[in-house]
Length: 336
Image (cartoon, rainbow, N blue to C red; front, side):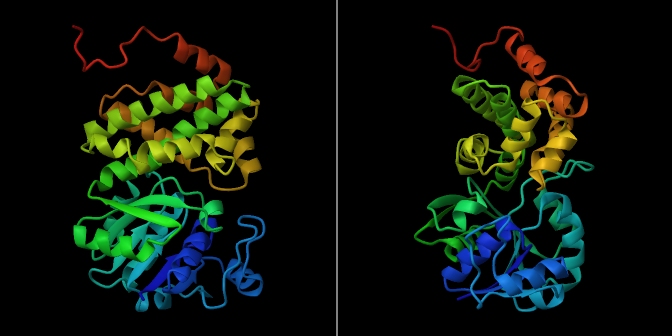
């Protein structure tokens, strides 16, 4: 049994806290908001964000960050991506040398174009920073629906330790050393999901969504390779796996926001209606800037940015994608 602190009491933090408790670990759940912590202590459920998922009394809910980190074998950082740096900064004085920190948020910091793991390592250089990613909606993990993810770490020893912590009959975990690839797949799929949702909102069909998914993972992998990630990672759980579930699922807030935009709402209106952090909006600008920095062509992500920030009509963006210059799908393959 390990002592695990889950930092962040949103839907993903709650689902992981329950999973880890069911795996036999001693779990603390930290909330940045005293009022949220009080409600969770009283009701043991967040009926608006994760209905039907009840936290047992054995999971202690607290707001004292120092106490949450004091004796933890690992800290699972489950706050939304825009709050990763500020939370990591608050954590830093209380983190021991080599203490394991598992980032489960997905995104790229817009101002610095750094991955979230890099952000955490900047703020907490003494920590052993790792990440857990893959196709994993909190709504399903919280209900014990079979799910598969991947853990990435700097050493095999740490990755295999965390694999053992999270593994269960309903939560299978693989390992990989490609931290950068896992981060980029998890962050950039949210931008493609906005495009897929927009296509749904416009009334397009499965053909359109399949095209966005397949060409979207091509864009992500092309950028990832240029940045130093491994191509194989993008065809695994944290790449195509996460992209499929985010583009297709009713649980996906990024797809839902895109759907509302496709129906004619502005980005601001869509985000207000979703009422949760839409990570793809935060990652879209960063993705476009990365494509320019590394000189990688990413037409879908470029058009998403134009729809979000330049008020380009979504139908016009789709038409411009369809009317691009003729291309070869597999330029690396020779003609006989």
